[in-house]
Amino acid sequence: MNTLVGWHVELEFQEQGAHTRAAALVRLPDGRELRAHGDTSRHPNDPEQLRVGEEVAAARALQDLARQLLDKAHTEIDELGAVPSYPLM
Image 1 (cartoon, rainbow, N blue to C red):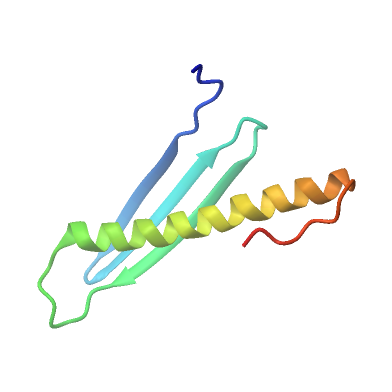
Image 2: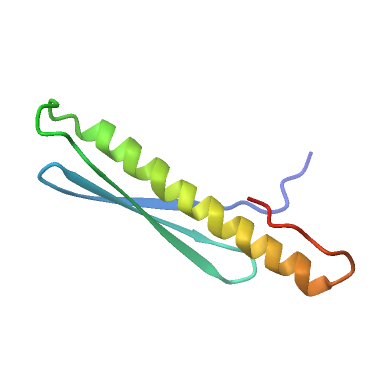
């Protein structure tokens, strides 16, 4: 099996107190960049666990990125116009 293309997703985090924000970026082979964000806040009674906040914020950012990729694919299918398409998500 040959790999024809690879995508790299970059994630960055900002933490301020109990709030964690993740920013995701993927550069696509067609030259477009998609950016997404995810947020989470720790409950005041929960112990401080930075990794957990990063995981939740990252998951939310990646969900947003997935939605954008599905929207992009749906639009490209519709542009071909051969067969009516349905939203992918």
